[in-house]
Image (cartoon, rainbow, N blue to C red; front, side, top):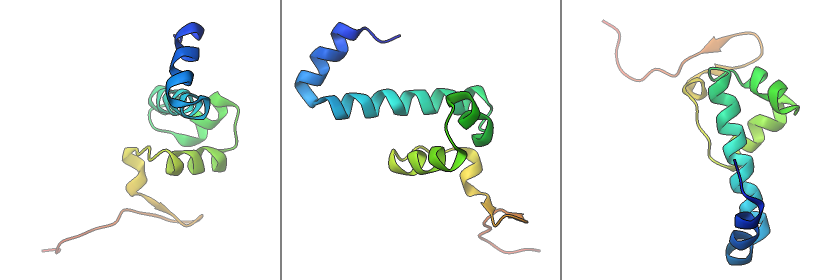
Length: 85
């Protein structure tokens, strides 16, 4: 849990915007972990649109195991490097 007095001190040092970004990043990471990396459910938990959550993940460089999966709306594929035998 965050202590408001500590947050005010930190905001004085690094700026309120940076503190709020750190809090938002922590909330997103926790929601994603609690939903077992399901971004749709994490967005529901945070009461934001899934697309907004995806954009915030990109902005804050938050990665999940599912980030390697490409979703074109109808098919899923996992990037493959190497050779098939």
